[in-house]
Image (cartoon, rainbow, N blue to C red; front, side):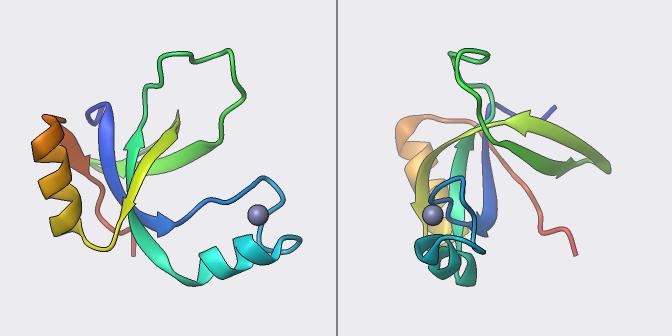
Length: 95
Ligand SMILES: [Zn+2]
């Protein structure tokens, strides 16, 4: 398993309606950011969370997540994580 906190390049999430029905979602979908995700939120089960697919060491896993912050670059995100003392796993682009 990756660490609780992961960095992943992804479009920002706005709401559940999605890019087809929501203009803000559509705008967000155009531009990817580096997201700092908490893949082990404390109140798991209480709230229906979106799931994210993560490729980790050749395996695809599905985890619930909270987005803690967005960054412009992995560098910026790593500096932030270091400051906060968070151990992060960087998820490589799946391409
Ligand atoms: Zn939206």
